Image (cartoon, rainbow, N blue to C red; front, side, top):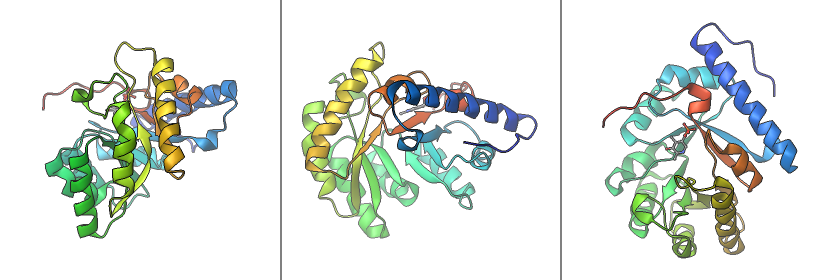
Length: 238
Ligand SMILES: *Cc1c(COP(=O)(O)O)cnc(C)c1O
């Protein structure tokens, strides 16, 4: 892919980050026999200003990921003129369903039946069709977000049958301290089971700055990359 010449300052920093991420993606594609076209790079822009999203968009990035509703809603409004596909990658609180449905194109964190009901009601009310990924708790510990692998097929059926929602696939984060290769191989199995019943639900959202190569090796279609593109986030207290 060709990117335009970077402007000075922040723009050139982001352009360098993007070039490096693209290099890593291409390396992983080459060594696993996959094609770059099978992958969507989602720039995780949480904690970074709308100005950074504009720079990313100027460099050809079309997919942006946010994990907090308030911040995401503000940036989606500020960047309404940009051709952006919005990914909500955080935990969705049921009482935020109305807001998230109003701007998100793909919600990655669908992990419980009650949330499916809330999202569906809001989507119908707003006349929207919203893509959903079932989040998988690869460590079988759903308290930190995600459904147990054994519960994923039923949840996928619920999303597929919910008016206003479109089941697009699955998502996971490699558990802390786990081998990402093992974790993403398990996610791939869960994804295959879902696709057997729902052939169109072919999205596998996996892989972040530190483990994108392992995600690509294990069939990921969507990568969620923040730090490697934009730099280390300043931790902040909610
Ligand atoms: C923040 C976040 C990312 C990006 O992580 P980096 O390590 O900064 O690339 C990916 N996925 C989710 C769910 C996140 O919350």
